[in-house]
Structures are given as structure tokens and as C-alpha cells.
Image (cartoon, rainbow, N blue to C red):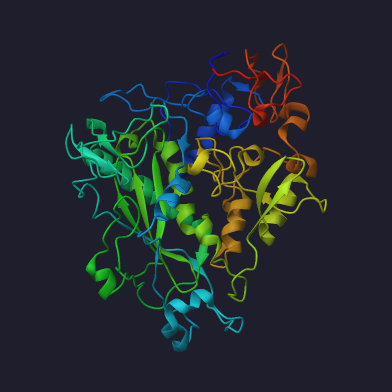
Length: 509
């Protein structure tokens, strides 16, 4: 039995040690076969109750896979993708940065008066027409024109120094320098030194197209949307996206895009750490639905070893574009296209001892109740992440409650799409979800209201442990689990104390 121990991910209670030295399958349709193969192997799960920021701190933790691989390093083992969506949103809120444009579309059943009102429809009055056409599978159009064509941001040769974000003006060229291993880490608004792995050659471009093609097909099966009448028209008012964005082609503005409900502009700019990709919406229609977005995939992760993880990562990131995003929440609509009064509720939770933000959308609550068996009136909504810093907090599900669900802040090859995530997108009012595309989420199933509303220190059975001397079956009865608990020389921070002894906690590993 393998005894290798890895650093748990955000808010995690377990971290799977997967068999090494095997290439992951790249096909989304074969994803379950890959996972079954992993489960069939003998693995060790680490059971420990920790707080997200404790697990993710630069002082105590190392990433799950090698950061900044040397050129030609083929032994790199890809285990997780860490999303930086909230960090990107933070950057986009800076003074002078346009978060998104609004371009009204013509839909079947949309009056000409509504169309001419344009941007004012984002403040839609109560009296609106309820007529709408039948929803059709979403059509996502991919544009690769910008791949490798931004000299100040794309790595074109070894030794190039390119921008990540918007580095501050400095008297010293190339300062600050990107360094994910520094304390504190420098991972954005810095200058990046390109290696051969950061260059998007023909083989990497082929992998990119294949992976995004699978992503488009997955969403075509999972979501339906009210199609536009005629071509999808974009404004081209400003560059679309993040890190300098991408300028929309002139014909998209003048003529529109045929047979499309969403245009994704693709780039291959480098990232730091274990962030494989990122994506943001940059243009919305009069109802707030994303009609254009920017997807960036780091070339050094376009490898055979990372194909399965990249498939899951791209689904995760496109979910952000489609609506799993705090900016989008403000535009969610009910069945009559009226702006929803409440999408999230923030309150002080006495049991958890902190402020908590919960999604209170009707379908999300319904599917959450069914999953957890949480039928008590004490269950009022599903928590969003509050740990992990600006990268993950606020735009992901709470890791302790959904663990390997695809819309938590870290993604791996075990990530699954739950009905709760599909429900959130359907509750936006923009989509109809195909719930048969949801996968089985075992974490927390039928554990009741107490599981959802209590801190993990109060959980029972295989969901927590308090002794390094004991091992036992994990929560899903698929492996032997054990506890990496140690006593430190000093007391842990209050939020990391889950035992009577204030210095007792998770091993740093």
C-alpha cells in the first residue's frame, strides 16, 4: 500500500494519493473509466479537519504538484488546478477597468421596444413580457485568432519577459519578477520569464483545440438557452477579457457571429503555480447573460499528463463565464425575466463562528436538500467558499461541504459536476439544465442538516478523526484512511483549532 502523503487542498478533509506514472485519458466521455481505474487501485486517504486558509498558506503548505517545471521535465505529476477567478475579478474592479459591455440581442418574442431600450434592460421594471421561445442546446463559438499573437503577453521564445496582469511602472525593467515560491508569493501583476514549456507550438495548439472542443460538446448536452434571432452581435467597445484582453474581430461587430449564443476568445498566456487556466465573461446581453468571454490556457499545462485534469478545469472555468460568478449573480432572473431579489444571503453563523454567504436560489436549495437529506428548516442555503484568499473565496462552493464537486476552488481528476451546480445555472433564468449530465457526488450524501450547518469538528464517523493511532474506512468505503495529526510547539491560530489542545492540528507534510 502506498504511504506517500500529499498536502490537502482547500478546506479538505481528505487528500487522495493517486497511482503515479500513468497517463490520464483525455476524453471527457472516458472520464468515469479513468476514475474507476484509480478507485480500483489501493490508495490512502488522509482524514483531517482543517480550515481552508490554513491548508493554503504559503508558510505551511506546498502545492500538490511541481510549480514552475524545468524545460523538458516529463515527470511532472498533475494533480490539481487552483482557480484564481476571484483574484481576476478583484483586478477588474480597479479604477478605469471596464468589467463588461452590454450588447442587446434580438430574441424570438422580444419586442423592438425592448431591443431599442438596450442597456436600460439591466434595470428591468416589474412589467415585462413573459413570452419566450423554447430553449435550444447552447452554441459556443471558439475563436483562436489571438493564440500566440500578443508579443507583450505570449511567450514566443525562451527568455522572453512578458506581462502577467498589469505590472506597476518601475524604474527597473522587469520588476517585480513573478515568483510563486516567494513569501509572499508574487503571482500576478508581475513580469514572467518564459521557458520552452511556455511556448504554444503546433502540438500544444492541437491539444488546446481538442480539449476545448470536448468542453463545447459537454455544455451543448448540459445546457439549453434561448437562441438569438439571427447573428449574435458584439459591441467591440473595448478589449474583451483579462490581462490586456482580446480585441474582437471587426466582423463580429458589423455582421455578428452566425449560429452562436456565446463567443469564447482563446489565448495561451503563461500562468504561475498550479493554475492551468482562467476565464471571465466580458460582454452580456440585455438580460445579463454572458455572450462573450475570454479563456486562457497556460501552454505548459497542454501535455498528455494533464489532459484529464485540463478537461475538468475547462468545464470549471467556462462555468464561471456562464454564470457561476458574483458579478453574474446580480443579473439573475426569475421565470418572468424579473431580476431576482436574492441570490445569496450573508449572515453571522453562530455555530460556525464566522460570517457565511449562502446561495438561496430555489433549485439549488431543492437539490441540496435531496443530496444531504437536509429537510430541516435550519437548512436555508448552500455555502460559498470563504477561504483560499482572493483567488477562490466568493465564487466557489464551500470545500468542506462539496469536497470534489467541480465548482469548489480546486479541481482534480476526481471532480464531478453535481446537480447543485447545474441548478445554480438554471436558477439564473438564462439556461435550462439537463440534470442527467450530473455525476454522482458522494461527499455528504444523506448526512443530514447537522452535516451542512455544523463545523467539521462536530462531524461523525468517517468524516473526521482525532487520533494518529487509528485507521479505518474512508467516508465512501473505498480506501483505508489515517490521520496526520501532530502537536506543535506553539498554539495554532483560533480558526485552525479543532481540538481541546490549542497546539494540536494537521501535519504540515
